[in-house]
Length: 67
Image 1 (cartoon, rainbow, N blue to C red):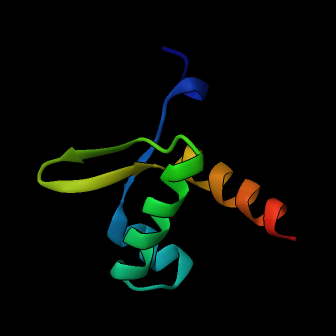
Image 2: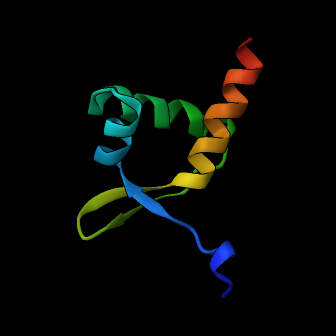
């Protein structure tokens, strides 16, 4: 697999730190984004991890739609 095609999964807690919000808010955001965008979420070693590239794209698209 080409390294440019590899996906990066980040923990929900790290997303909270990156976007300066609490876990409850991030969980609600993930649920809301899942209604209209494909954002892969998996459980790895007992922790939820999110496909970071898909998450960023969904957030950007959602912000464009709301402006």
